[in-house]
Amino acid sequence: MPAVVFDQVAKTYAGARGEVRALAGVSFGIEEGEFFGLLGPNGAGKTTLISILAGLTRATHGTVTVMGHDVVSDYAAARRALGIVPQELVFDPFFSVRECLRIQSGYFGIRRNDAWIDELLAGLGLADKAEVNTRQLSGGMKRRVLVAQALVHKPRVIVLDEPTAGVDVELRQTLWGFIADLNKQGHTVLLTTHYLEEAEALCGRIAMLKQGRVVALDRTTNLLAGTASTMLRFKTDDALPVSVAGHARVTGRSAQVTAHDAAEVETILGQLRQGGVRVEDLEIGRADLEDVFLEIMQRETTT
Amino acid sequence: MNVVSLAGARTLFDKEILRFWKVSVQTVAAPVLTAVLYLLIFGHVLEAHVQVFPGVGYTSFLIPGLVMMSVLQNAYANSSSSLIQSKISGNLVFLLVSPLSHWAWFAAYVGASVVRGLAVGVGVFAVTVWFAPAHFAQPWWIVIFAVLGAGMLGTLGLVSGLWAEKFDQTAAFQNFLIMPMTFLSGVFYSVHSLPSFWQGLSHLNPFFYMIDGFRRGFFGVSDVSPWLSLVVVGASFLLVSAIALRLLATGYKIRS
Image 1 (cartoon, rainbow over the protein chains, first blue to last red):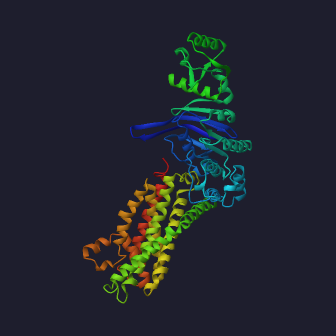
Image 2 (tube, chains in turn green, yellow):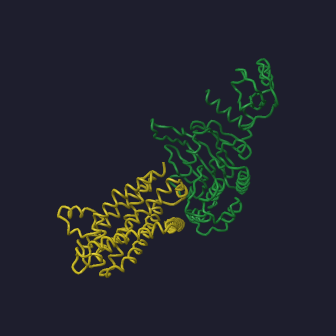
Image 3 (cartoon, each protein chain N blue to C red):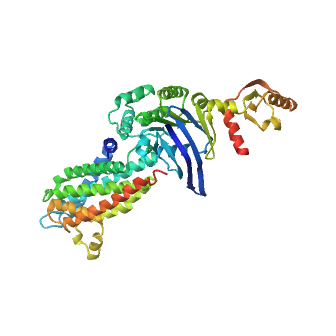
């Protein structure tokens, strides 16, 4: 049985200037035990899709199931199988970390859960903050509490909506270690992130959304193999010739140009020489997920 | 409701109690002080001039009115402020992702509001009872109307908390609806002392029946029959409860 199924999910909002279509018929499934990545630029519909999964938003059309339970008609069972780490850094200022976790656990019908709560606190590096009021925690600590709250009822499916946005390296390491362990134990993980190297390292399969549609859906290795496989990276102070600039990504002095094969690399180097561009630190390497992502997004714009 | 969802509802109820109890100076002590100030000032000014029921001094008459006013206002404040705070700070999401049904939300929010209302009511009574002789002619009416009134106002607070998007909207609901209806219900006077037009108008105010029925329990006399009051208050409570449950079930303004 798939852990999560999105079937023809569409969502239109009534906006100030007429209807806004956030999702235009999204369909895909996530198998049990998968580590699945959902990627896309801002406004692509990732958070809307996750909100529909969590029951925070209602789909205009289509159905979503979690472990076979419809998120609308069988919401209680669906939500018991689901643990969501929201994107916003929210907290309840009235309570300590332990109180928040006990309350969240109680909402799911588990009134005595201190053994698991202690394990969560230790695993997420929160043990010494258990009795501290959530209001007094730093942003990174609040994020850890959100993760603990999402896991307090041991959900089969864990959803992380940009969990590492604005989070330091240490927490990322702690968090991914903890989530990877849960995934190994059979929990399904759905992740959205802007850090594509994280998605590349963690996710077995990836869906890319753009303007409310799935524009790519494949195993991470296939995505990396299937598109521009070679990258030319270099630094320069000079302006790139138009023929190269069209498919280059420039960040300050650094430039990256995609190529599909060795002949194309030759062509690009020739164009740079002709354009009088002085190149430093030239590297030719394999494309990473960021390159794949940008190529797919650009292709979708031009077609 | 099965055992799991009962435990969930119980947790939300406990959380709502703990929330107001943690700030009890503001949520319990402050309203008690306010009520005592009303009693001292109005009692002092009017004691010698007004006698509403035969053999009952004005201060004695005023105490149940002030107790009930405190019960109603605090029951309203509990659910409305809790919900609007959770909505604005965004932590309502913890509840929205939970499997709790609309019945569980309703029972927990209204139940905790009743507890807060009664806690303040008991506090006000404990402090004011020393100022005038106490009467307990028909105590069952005291309990029935206190619980029903607190339940009704807790439900109104739930509705306004769901509807409001800002703090000033729940405050407006309080200042332009709850306060006038409470003050014009006979907290400070018997509606029989009013000109007949205003007396007729008072009889359209459900808050009048809450206070009149509540006071009946103390003095054994009232402006209208306590059974009529029970029917009016019970029917009003059922009506606002149906509205609140409908809003919760459809996710009005909390699930887009």
